Length: 103
Image 1: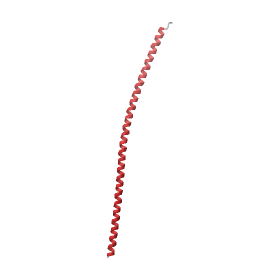
Image 2: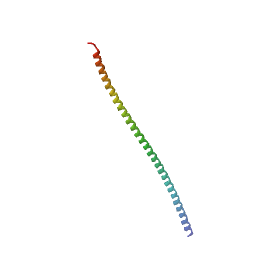
Image 3: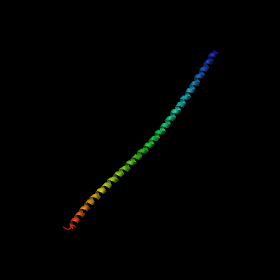
Image 4: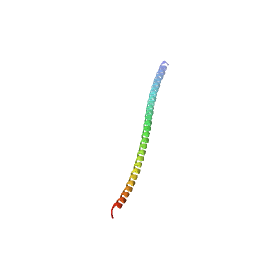
């Protein structure tokens, strides 16, 4: 019976060792998964920050483009007014020239 008891103790010790090693591997796997998840969370946070910065830059670019469009529209209005004034002056000069020319 002593041999059977020793075999049983040896098998129990082997089973316990395998279970402990399996537990260590599982803990290491969990730590690796946690580390990977933490890295992914950090990268996601960085991506959110960069996306927010890009959105702010796009909003500023839109404001700048709108200002440029408004300035261009104002410049066009002033150019049109200048052309109209030039046409009026040309007509006035033509009338003055016609009155001053002897017939």
